[in-house]
Amino acid sequence: MTFFGLIIDSSFKNEETTMSRRLEGKTAVVTGGARGIGAAIAERLAADGAAVAVSYSRSAEEADALVARIKKAGGRASAHKADASDPAQAKAFVAAALKEHGRVDIVVNNAGWGSSFPSRPSMRST
Image (cartoon, rainbow, N blue to C red; front, side, top):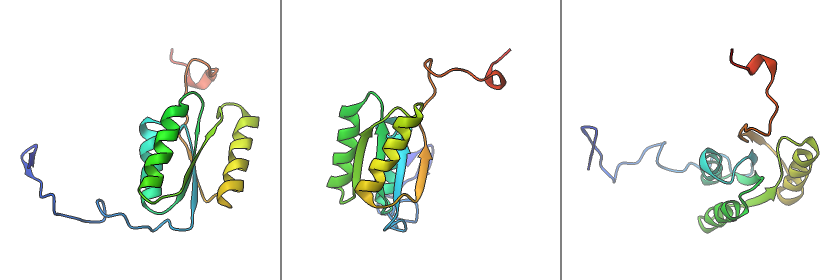
C-alpha cells in the first residue's frame, strides 16, 4: 500500500504499532473520554495495560461502547456520568474510579469547553 508516496508494509511492527503493556497495574482517569480524542486516548492507555475510567456528560451510549471495545480487547474499563465542570461531580468520578480500580495514577483532563462554560477574561479574544 502507498500513502503519500510512502510504501506501507502491513507486516512492519515497531514501538508505535505494538502494544507495550508498559502501563500494566496503573489506572487512568480520562474526563470527556467517551468519544473523539478522549476515546482514542482511553483506548491507547488501555492497550498499553492501564485500567481506564472515563467520564461523560451526555454520551452514555458512546461511553458504554468504548468500555465494551476495551474489555473485548482484554482491557479493564469503566464509564461514569460526570460533568467535569462541576467540582462535586468531578470528585465523585474520581472516587468511583478509585473504588472500582483501586488507584489513580494518570489523569487526562480532556473534557471540552463549550458555551456552558464561562469564559475567563484572559481567554477572550478582542
